[in-house]
Image (cartoon, rainbow, N blue to C red; front, top):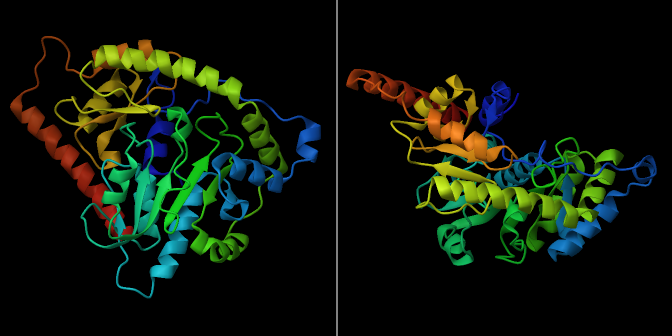
Length: 351
């Protein structure tokens, strides 16, 4: 069953103006491996290339079927190690990618944004949904008191910045994927970088819990990795134009470093605005899915983004000449609060 965010996007994929997605699928054409490359595919070669590129010991890098699987494996591993202790929570800075919090809850690590001691702190870099990058001092300060730190770098290559692989080496876990930047949705390839102190134990867990990658996925990931200069030129060309369109529409907002942005100027509520946009065949992701009811997430990855953004700006406000009554707005607010409360109860129940 897909996550709430994936279900929202998949359920409305036929909208004429799609601002819900965050990957390059459909915007660029990734390379396809040849039959010979598939037959010769070697996961250890892919593992070595990724480790060399990220500057880490190959023994610390583990292949997965995507970042979600990697995040799930790490959080389950951390939860098992924390089972005998008193500190079991997961620190989250809302708004945040909802799957991280949900996976933590399923692993028995209840998510909270309170600065209490925690078994793990989770973070996306660049941030999903806001698209911003945190500095290393800010990350270290925010994660203080958490025994371990999991950073999902799914969007890192969109920002063109080095990996955090050498940061906080004793307690930092990193995950990444070929799905977003490389448009590798059909490859299903990701990876985990474990702290040196947990490398051997996680290797045993990985060998038991996770399957080997199919040869096609390995060959496709290597082909995309080798074709990265060409893919980067195409991605940067699209994102540069789309970030410029975002800046023209929101001159006082920060220009996102990732492939998404978060519009907090919506009124009265992100859920209400997302529903209003659907009626105009515009897809955006409501903020309550990310733990913040005040906005909507907007994807910047499609070539049609300038036109899609214009359609969004026209759709997000009530029709000209029609002003919602106060009772209508209160009703909508109550509906949004009930939806957020239902999501919160469901997450609490999972924990």
